[in-house]
Length: 296
Image (cartoon, rainbow, N blue to C red; front, side):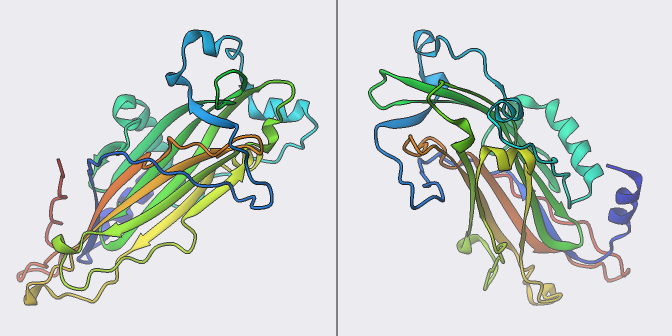
C-alpha cells in the first residue's frame, strides 16, 4: 500500500465499515451463452478443462502463443492496453504482488483473504475446444482470471477489480481464435436471516462482461462496486445495519463453433459483511470495527 493511501485510511473516523469475509460454498455448474444471439453455437463442440483430458488427447497442443502474437499474424490490429483505474493503482499492485506469494490459496474459489479489507483471486484456466465425441480437437485456450476485492473502513462499499489476462491460444488451422469469447458474470445475494432489518445492497449497473479475446487482451480490467445504504447511526436502537451479502461470479467461454463452457459456475465467491461500528461515548472517534464473520 502506498504511503498516501495508508494515511488517508488511517485518518478516517466515520463509523461505517464493510468487511470482506471468507465464504465456503459448494461449486455449482452454470453456463452463459455468448452475447452473439444471431450466431448460435452448435452442439457438436465444447470447451472442456484440459485437466480432464488424457495426455494422448492433449498431444499436439503444447505450443500455445500469446493472443496478441496470434492476432497479429492473422491481420487483427493491436490495441493499446488499458491501465487499471480505481481503486488506487498502488494498492492493486501491492495486493497482486502479495497474492503471488499465496498462489495455492489465491486460486481457490474464495481466493486469498489478506485482511477484512482486501482479498485476491488469481486463478489460471486451461481449456480445450473439442468436438463432443472427443474425435477432433480444435484448439487450446489458457488465461489467468484475477479478482481483487477492496473494502473500506468508513464506507459501506466494496470494489472488485476483475480481469482476464495473460491469454494464450493454439487453434488448429481451420479454427479462428479471434472469434473466441470469454465472459465474467457476477451476481449477488443477501442472507436476510443473519442481517439486521431491511437489508439492502446496491449492485453496479453492469454485472456481466462477455467479450472477444481481443477485447480482453487490450482492456483486461473492469471494476464493480457494491454498496449498502447508510441510514446513519442506529446502534442506540440495537441496529448495527449488518448486511451479509454474497458476491459470486461465473465464467463462460465460447466460440461460434462450440457450445458454451459449462464448468465455470461459481468460480469466484466472496462473502461481505456491511455494518456500522459504534462510536465511543468518551470520544468522537470510531470504535474498532467489528471482526469479520469467517464461515466454515
